[in-house]
Image (cartoon, rainbow, N blue to C red; front, side, top):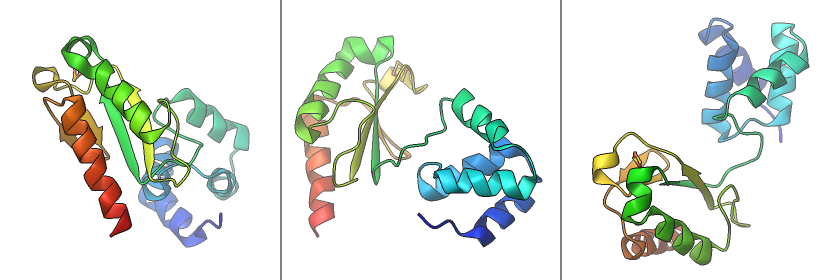
Length: 154
Ligand code: FES
């Protein structure tokens, strides 16, 4: 992957050399942290590459593997779990043929689970990119995935 150096320069300047904010911006732009971007950041900030990797690997929110166009996050916190969150994960595993942590071969969907999304009252929650879907069921999830798959073919 070719990294846009101007983007890296601007990101470093915009974030006042705050490494975490720089990495967050890069991840938001590429959906993950390409290795080349980390090398560029280290070079441009004149810091050891190992320091950049230390930050990336310390924070769970940073990802070194490319993610899909749709990141599906199913909450498996207690409130969502007892209302059927696990059944939704099982459905998605079957429908997408991936397990949590994986991305479909066409790079369309990534499946993830979390322990709480902070809106337990309307669980089970399925988050797709930044959109929250409350009171989900396996059936509703299936319809949602179907519509996203259709979008892909339009
Ligand atoms: S347990 Fe699912 S949102 Fe809190």
